[in-house]
Length: 206
Image (cartoon, rainbow, N blue to C red):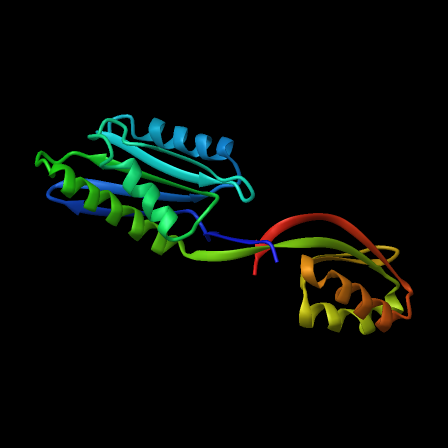
């Protein structure tokens, strides 16, 4: 099964270390362009901050990494944040740590610890989820067959949507490795009297 781990949701955390404020924002993202968009928003909202440090790791088959110290001493900010992302084996994630300097220098070691802690706390609050490749099926059913088909869908698979018209159409998310069994179950339950169409693929929470 094709899977990856990422963060569950966008969050914000804050900690104060020796009078400096470290505000962490964590974003699930699907592309570098999306990461850049969120980063630009943070930079605009916090133009008065001392530093807007960031790191991201994006891509499932070909992972792209990027980080920046944004004026902090080299290797003391962006790289530690990226290392926390890598230690958690996460992709499709952006972490931005905004620092408001409190007047007390932390030194290189102190900065590495502070940015690492800020990233860890943000990721912990965001939550880590595993996502797997699913096939989105459109399942078209005559009304008399709904009672035979729906229990199978509800018990084993994820119904994303149901529409009612001339027929009932279920939008169903099926793990890629289960598609053969899914199709067989439905054909057996309906004696082949349903419509099955693959409507795309995507990564969804396991």
